Image: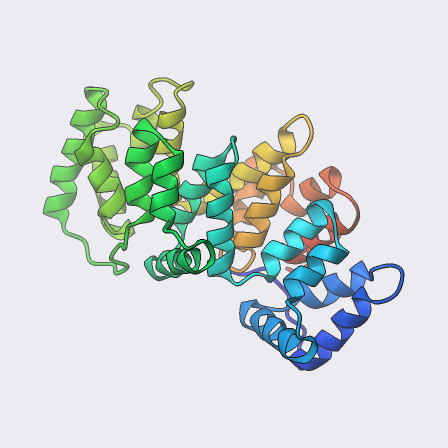
Length: 316
């Protein structure tokens, strides 16, 4: 469900590199040309552009972009040009350093990537930072957050559709029991959320809903001001219906006093090739406004152009 428009005939990576080199040359950077090329190439094509650029010009195109661009436009272009695993590693590392919203970013990466993609991100983290992501997250988080995030990030879930209904029923009961006891950090509750396949979790949570009359997230709303509970609800949402979670991130980012460009950039750069079409549909359903209109009202300049290109503005 990608939204990135790839032209019917794509120039060779060498031609793209020559044009990008021209975009960097002279007094001013040609931002439109950068958008025209990079926003309309898929992950494999962008990877080839990076390799070819390094071969021809003996320079890393990310460093060139970093030199030539600035602010939010620079950030979205850099994140977009990175390999997905490298991008996740970068975002996870940044999340261990930033004071706000860091737990959300770590949870997103852990819950919305496939097992293979999460494994690749962990490998990229090793390669780039000479440490493990679990090591850094353990060090930078505390208490219940650490208890939840470390196993989430080290998970390698089964990806198939097979479901064991006996397990689903018994684990739905465990979840209900722990929530009634307000034992939200209980090791059994965390074990179920951090190890079971998404298909198995869906079966468990459907049974929970039918048996106990409430969706689990409703029961986890006991204290709306509790940050750990908010993260726990987001974890459930990301594991079971990520488009509903990802619809809310840009909505909150745009509705703030002053846009949260970090959140907006992250969602667009990480989901444009995954499920952006579903996110757009969910956004329109919830807000009665298309996402591209909401972004247009709230952003400007090259940053706006890049975001709109990545979410497939004008695509039907």
